[in-house]
Length: 143
Image (cartoon, rainbow, N blue to C red; front, top):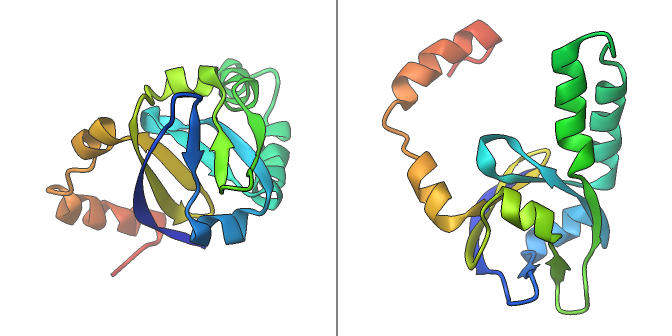
C-alpha cells in the first residue's frame, strides 16, 4: 500500500526520482498514465493489470466508457527505473499534468500520484473534510 508525500524536482530531461519506499513496491518497471484531477497515476504492473481488466469489461457501446478507456490507455507508458532511482516521464504526460520543475509524489493506496507542486498545493485544501467524511457513509466508510 502506498502512502506519504515526497517533494522532488524534474530535471531538464524530464526525469524524476522515485522515492525508495515507492520503488520497493513498484519494482523496476511500472505504468504511468494520465490521472484524474490533473495529475499522473502510477501503477505497479499487477495493479495496472487489474485496472486494465476493469477497463476491458466496460461496454464499447457506451460512449462515456469508450472515452474513459481512451483517457487512461492512450496516455499510458511503461517506464523503467534507472540506476539513480529515476524515471523518464514522457513529454506528453509531463504536458498533461503541467509538470515543469517541482513535483509531489503522493501515495494513495494502490497507486502513486505525481502532481505539479503548485497544483497540489491549490487542490489539497482539506477545509471541507468534515462534510466529505459525512458523505463517505453513503459509500460504506464510517469513522
